[in-house]
Image (spheres, rainbow, N blue to C red):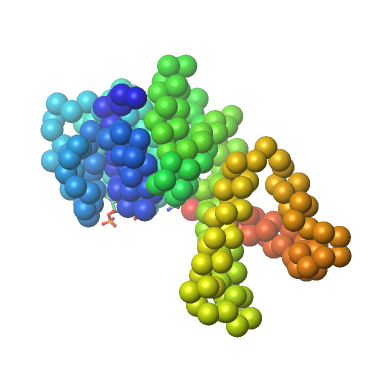
Length: 264
Ligand SMILES: NC(=O)c1ccc[n+]([C@@H]2O[C@H](COP(=O)([O-])OP(=O)(O)OC[C@H]3O[C@@H](n4cnc5c(N)ncnc54)[C@H](OP(=O)(O)O)[C@@H]3O)[C@@H](O)[C@H]2O)c1
């Protein structure tokens, strides 16, 4: 796939995951702007400040992957490159309205996206919304983002904000599960190497089975749960209404509350 002229702004955890994913697909941003990026220079160009970007560079797409607090500074420095560009913001809790304000007079088209870190291995899920794009521009964004995993267009920002604590933050919950399983393996007397192997293998294997299967996750769970068997006894505890179901709702609500605080 050929890439449009692309400027990646911020090559930290998320920008770096996207960059790694694109490279694995044989794609590369034209220019990476990051003041601390240690990416090798080819096939793209790495610059530390916007002032180093050639004045005649006209990015079709600018991917903004700095911390939400860095939005104004980054977009102010990019003013000469914003006109006519599609700006895809990966920033949590930064609204289209605030992005547009930070772009000033520039005629940029704003897209809000919420990726997740499995993008680094092409297994990400990116939620995305925009009311600024025609069909061809939307297809361009889809092809770029689908190079690092699944793409889920949603109708509006409310839906994007609802998706953020699920898929944007979700890998952290799954890694926590692996951590907790490893700790439990140690607690019940298994040696550290075995604890690590079985915890990681279980989480990644179950994820791979889920990805490979057409079955609902509920069905896959039931398939490994014999009535009154060993798994059933563990699930009795985890699935009690005040246990995981309530804890997960509380966690998602807490994350959404923080996203609203950050947006205001
Ligand atoms: N991490 C995730 O799982 C995840 C998931 C979904 C969405 N996101 C979103 O992704 C965005 C990036 O998060 P992150 O965790 O990847 O951040 P990060 O690791 O801090 O990476 C941002 C990078 O951009 C650089 N930078 C910031 N402003 C710059 C500027 N004006 N010019 C040049 N370089 C600049 C930073 O350098 P300095 O450190 O020197 O500022 C840093 O190297 C956030 O807005 C977050 O909401 C993250």
